Image 1 (cartoon, rainbow, N blue to C red):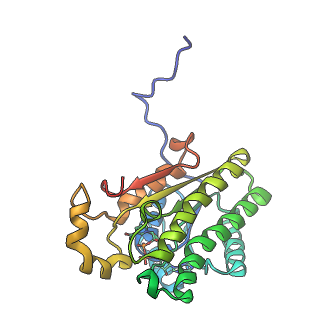
Image 2 (cartoon, rainbow, N blue to C red):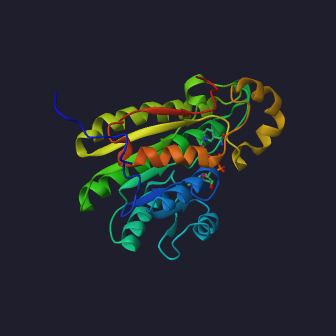
Length: 262
Ligand SMILES: NC(=O)c1ccc[n+]([C@@H]2O[C@H](COP(=O)([O-])OP(=O)(O)OC[C@H]3O[C@@H](n4cnc5c(N)ncnc54)[C@H](O)[C@@H]3O)[C@@H](O)[C@H]2O)c1
């Protein structure tokens, strides 16, 4: 049998040094934590958000002053996405080769009371946004990247797997992100771009603050670990999936839920 490398004594490089990473929804919650962990791992981070002020605030929390950039991006609009990708490339000197699709919204209502606007809000940001940003990212990397090896992580949700009451538009959009991840993964693997997704459970962020107050007790009973998650606990998994440490992972859906929904 051929001798294999001793993987027990050597620590694989976890660094993202030299990589440019674009994060959508980087102005808050899980997206902000992703920016912080990716910067810690050495990536130059392009913090994007529909709320530019929030993205700029994230910049102040990152190590490496002056290295990272904040760019406004509305993931629902193709022109906004393309302009932001171009601005990122101009400011960083190369296109991003790492992408985190994290921008998201949620609306809460029973199916019988869900109007079309509310339905489309979830689909437009969470699903169409993931499609538009991934397509623009991959095009710019394949056309302009010197080293076109790339990785994408989509932030879906455990609700996209299990469904959830009062979240029809949200759960449908996140189920869509899961299947879009697998399709993109299958198409882009041969072009050296790996695509995977993360399914967070209940994470303490501004998005869940009001729902938490309402449902905390019931939900806690359903989470085997007995607590909510922290944004950085999702971000650590994202950093792993973007790094070469996950080099054989393609189209995977990694649950970060404290055991909820498994
Ligand atoms: N918090 C949780 O429990 C949880 C669980 C599962 C999945 N998620 C997902 O994680 C992602 C981040 O959620 P969060 O909890 O950090 O929420 P958050 O509300 O704290 O952050 C969401 C960010 O997305 C930005 N955003 C909204 N619409 C946008 C648009 N059109 N274009 C660009 N940016 C836009 C917001 O400005 C905000 O900065 C979302 O996709 C969410 O669905 C969250």
